[in-house]
Structure formats: structure tokens, C-alpha cells
Image (cartoon, rainbow, N blue to C red; front, side):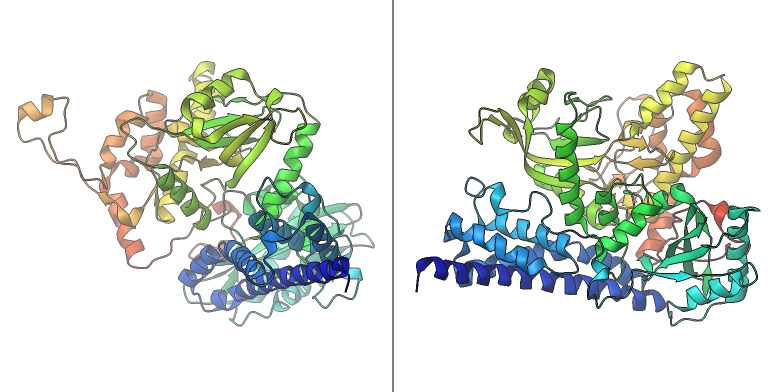
Length: 603
């Protein structure tokens, strides 16, 4: 038999084995996502959190499995470039009529780059851009459920229609009063629609899968009337008696953006055709990048792939330079940004001041903890990349000098591709959404004058939100560690989000103490502490001098969040968490909740 034909058979077998590896991955991913329904019905909140955390690891586990199998059965790393070119062509053939082609392409890239040494593989061997379209997959011979269901109510049948669309999810727990809740929803819908005439195309479209996260299940859809569309989400929760209630009706892109925020845990939703879900959600939230929608659905690797493609596209269509990020420089992370691009790049420094008793591996462990934990809308999600190449001519010289000084092990400058174009290669980097640092936000108000009404309002909002952020983190069993204003940022929706993770700890691992009384007058007058401090000891009453030096800030903080300076507050929450209590953290404002919902446990 001809060698070329043998190579072709081998290439097909490798491609088929890789596709089988992806199919196994997505089958397990869907199964875990589908099981969220039963966990919700049985109020297994700890199980839900555990499943959300463990599902994040699925992808890397399956990539390692596939890579090991290909090496074992086909000696994949020893095959020629010609064989790998054929592997890709055969794989493209296997993507025809596949329901998750974009995810399968990314899986191919992950396995291929794990097997082949970086100096060996070329872009010809991976999917730099999609080879198979995800448009209208459902128009083929799809066995998946339709992505969304459509309902066509009249004004008279609106309440019955809302009841029907809820019942169509077949939740195996009784509602406390579904007719009452449907009436609340209809009232909210009518308020949103106003007195407009219902057009011939009036309909409600609802995604077929419920979106599960922590203690909630969310109906997600949109109302279409004429040329207008109104996105909405209905949180379904357990009340204190174990019955279900619709807690609120969220309307508009802003409400949905907060619900799907990069600062929240990933949803669990059973999707046969994920690209169709992303397309539907993008129609509701056009300002949200597709990469972040994939992330929100738990498909973080696909989100990472799309983000990098968006980044390369932005580089090609911009000319500004990377620079040291504005704000106070961190002791552990070196942060830079591209002014025209709404993200920051964070590199772990090679060495730290004596007060930072940590290591590179410990810092990476903290970032992994945040990735896997419930971020309750208060911790920014990050994308982690290795060996990222940037054009050298896009880097400010001051930034290069900064990296050479503080993180030389993470920097390489070379013509790696041999094309005469110098590149900056960063060995390891975290990328996250850019926010306005809270200290800068407050300084802008101070500069305007604290007696100015607008400045007063800005200070009030920022300080109240800062305290709310810390309390939400406490509810999620997270102690921020370094609580300085510079470690928090303001999002475009005015939410305060924490983003400095090198000192975070679980609340349950800390020991919250009151400062012991001075033993004698010399103790009181001394600038030194007179009591012993263990490695996990925290003294909340000492936060004040570091945080509340400004009188305007102190006044607002003490009115709203004085309890954060009391060890008893922290000890109380710590005890409840240790006893197994899962706190309620709302992904929407309290005033959006329906009247009957005030005593309800909520995600």
C-alpha cells in the first residue's frame, strides 16, 4: 500500500480519536449541567456549588485524556507535518453536521498544541479562525430541542401564557402560588410595554433551558412587539417552606448584563447547540462580547479562544501603545493596558516586598480559587494565558523597562517567527475587564469638592457600594485580605468589584479578634502593638485608620457599614458558614423583588 494512503488512514484515525475525545467531554459537560435541575429541585445548594466548581476542571481533564490517548495509540507527537495537515482536513470533515463545531475546533487546538512543541506546530495545523459556520445549525437534521419556545398571548391570555411557559420547564416542586406570581409578572410586563398597541407579531420567546446558579433558576427570554424587543429574566427561587416563587421580573439589557456579569459564577444550562444560545443572548445583550457570553455559560475555553481572536483583530485595527496601567502600582502584580482596549493585563512579579510573604505558585492558587468560587458579582473573572506574543513596536519603552525590572523571567523579546518582526512574549498573564480603581473614582470627587452635591453623591454611592461588596464577599466565604480602596474597581453599572487576589482567604480559615485592652499606659502610648498576632488573625477595628482617613468617607461608612469594624460581625457570619448556611446574595436590587418575596431565600 502506498505510504501516502497509510498516512491518510493514520490521519483519519487521529482526527476521529480527537473528535471522540471532544464528544465525551461535551457529553459529560451537558450531563453535569442538566443535573443542576435536580439539585435545584432538592435544594442541594452545596451540591450545586460543588458541581459548578468541578465542572470548570472538566475541559483540562479531557484535553489531557485525549493527548495521552493519542500519544499512546498513534505516537501523535512523532508524526510528520504532512500527517498533521491531513488530520486537520479530516477533522473538518467530521465537523459537518456537528452541533458544537466551534467548541470542537477549540478542543482540537488545545490537544494539538499540547502534543506538538510550540516551535513545531504552525497556524496551518490549528483553527486560527473558524472553518465551519455555526449559523442556522438547527436548520439541519438536529436532534436537539429547539433553542427557544415562542408564545403568542393576547392581553386577555397574558397571565395564562406566563403560567404555561413556566410549567413547560417541568419543575418537580410545587409553586407557593403560581397564579399570583404570574399576575406579578404580567403587571411588570405591562408596565414595561406601556400603552403601546400589541402588533401582529407580538410574542414571547423563551430559551428552552433554565439557567441555574447557586440557589436560583432563571427563565431567560424576550418580548417582541413590532420593531422593539424587551429582554427579560424571571428568577425562580425556593421560599422558606420549600415552595417555588417567581421572585422578580428583570427587564432590559442593563439588568441582563448584571445578571450575566463577568463578576458572577458561570451558569449551568443544558444546551444542545450552544452557538444558538449565544446568538439569542447576544440579541438581548448586544454590548456583551460573545467571548463573555460563552464564559457565562460555563464554556470558558471557548470564551478564551474568542477573546484572543477579538484581541488580535483589535490590534490590527488600532495603533496606540501598551502602557503601565494608571493608578497605584501593586506590590505583587505588574499591570499594563492598551488604552483603546477595555481590559488589563496582569503579570506576577518575580519578587515582592518583605510584607508580602507569598510565592508565584501561591498567587496562581488564589486566582484559581476565584475562578472556581462563587464570585457573587464582586470578584472579576480572569482569563489566564501562557506564551502570549505582542508586537514589540506597540509597547511603550517605559513599560518594557518596568517588566525587565520587576518580572524579567516573564519576558522574552525576539523574532521568534523569523519574519523580521520583533515580538514581546509574556510567559504568563492574567487578563480581566478594566474598571475605574475606586481610589481614583473617589479622588475625582474630592477634587471636585466634597461640598458639591454631585461629588457628595459620588462619594456616598462609592462608599456604600464598597461596604456592600465586602459584605457580599463575606456571604461567599471570602475575606479580601487587602481591603484598600485601590484594590476595588467601579464597573460601568456602578458596581464595586474586587480584583486583587493575592491575600484573599476563606472566612472560615481566619480568626477574627478584638484588639486586647492595653496592659498599662505605656502600651497605649506606644506606636508598637502590645499583643500577639497569628498568621490568620484579623482585627477588624484596625481597618478604620487605613480606610477612613477622609472625614466625608468616614461619615458615610459609619452610617452604613460600621459593623465591618466589629469582630462580632465577622464571627457571626463565620459561624453560620461553618454550620452549613448558604447566604443569599441577590444579582439584582432589592427594590426589583415582588412584594411577596421579602422572606425568600435567593441565589
